[in-house]
Amino acid sequence: MNLEKPMKESYVEMTEVVLPNDTNPHGTIFGGKVAQWVDIAGSISAIRHCRMTVVTASMGQLDFLSPVKVGQILILRSRVVYVGNTSMEVQVNIFSEDPLSGNRQKTGTAYLTYVALDGSGNRVRVPRLIPETEEERNLLELGEKISSERKKAGI
Ligand SMILES: CC(C)(COP(=O)(O)OP(=O)(O)OC[C@H]1O[C@@H](n2cnc3c(N)ncnc32)[C@H](O)[C@@H]1OP(=O)(O)O)[C@@H](O)C(=O)NCCC(=O)NCCS
Image (cartoon, rainbow, N blue to C red; front, side):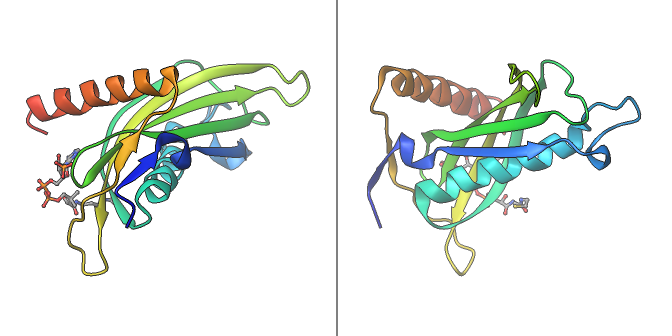
């Protein structure tokens, strides 16, 4: 197993179209559907970092900044922003795109924690996370803060 991995190896961009079945009675996207897509994108980031089976330990924070209408495109960008021993903190940024104008708007952010498991379901140490740019170093700092606040809160 790799002892360390660049942050960029965990990058995921997932694109979805908001169909009528994905919406609430107001014709805007149903939050539970977004949570599902967020968890899929986030888990792929965690898997790309550790190349092991992962489970979702926590969907710690999921903020919805603006509504997304049926017919719009949803883009989820996710990456591992911090690792502990067996856990990985993942940030998912969510954008909506108008299919006709191409206008993009940030509509949400989520932070999740995944834990790596081996074939027998035992927790496994994950590779160290290596930031390579200023932006990634800042994200690592943010991820560490989120992880330590969660631990301080006893979660
Ligand atoms: C997540 C899980 C594997 C943790 O196992 P555990 O025996 O409680 O492990 P520990 O308390 O020793 O913690 C192990 C790691 O997980 C982290 N962790 C545990 N619970 C957590 C939580 N609720 N939120 C965030 N991180 C958590 C710990 O901080 C620790 O991180 P570290 O190894 O980097 O220091 C276990 O609780 C589990 O299997 N939960 C169910 C997962 C699931 O079914 N998810 C939904 C479908 S994928």
